[in-house]
Length: 313
Image (cartoon, rainbow, N blue to C red; front, top):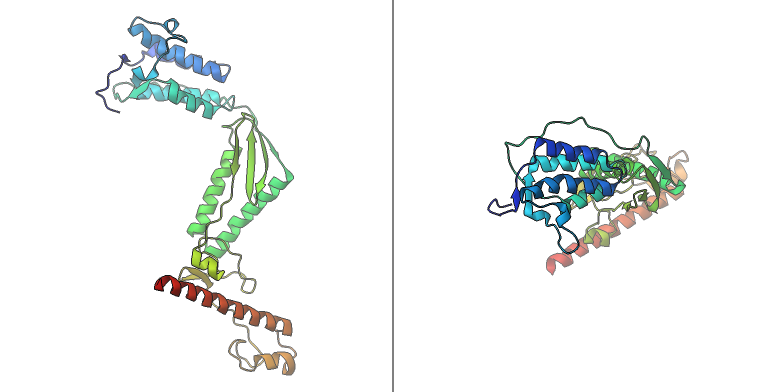
């Protein structure tokens, strides 16, 4: 803010004035009384500088907080005291929004310091959480989802880290007491929660999957930034990115009766079905693999066709 702006009063509160304001905030019995203590403790002394008082203002003459200014250190000390006291009522957010419109303007003054005061925890002794049965299932599903992301993409991948960090941040907000000492949690959707707080705030912790690219959706292939379950054949597989598409890095090699891999043996179906009864592949599994290979080829053909259309267009 420009220092060339003029104010009706621009000065620091004295030590006694600031101490009286902080003491009044600490003993306030409600959110409204906190704000009243701020108005009386801050604007009362400032108005005396211009030989006025709060009694001179009312419905027909309003007080403009922007016409007054105090040092930023004193502004922060008063705001911190109000936030701490508001924790007793679960209205920290209400106080923060109200102070932004109610407090005077702040300015930097390195010569003004505020002595440290002993901090007091005004929060209630316990936080009552009521969690529905469906919500517990979604919490477990979200935790499992994060574990699967780490298994599939790797513990250091952006997909895993982004999911874990946002989930932990959301759960920490739910368990905190900034919105009150009583919270009810219910299901809001797949891996999503709806939170109702005792202070009246209602918010949701929503799971949003990363959108897949257009060409990948046309080919039926998952996006690298979106979780896909591990392969049921290989189980734990590593990934490599080919044209933006996750693929298993190594194919599963299982020997057949001829001592070769199933994919390389020209007589694999013959030995598996007739000559080699002890072969590990049954007729149904061979059919499943053939169908899977045909579907994979079709997806690649669709992806290449979409890329060709995009390039030619």
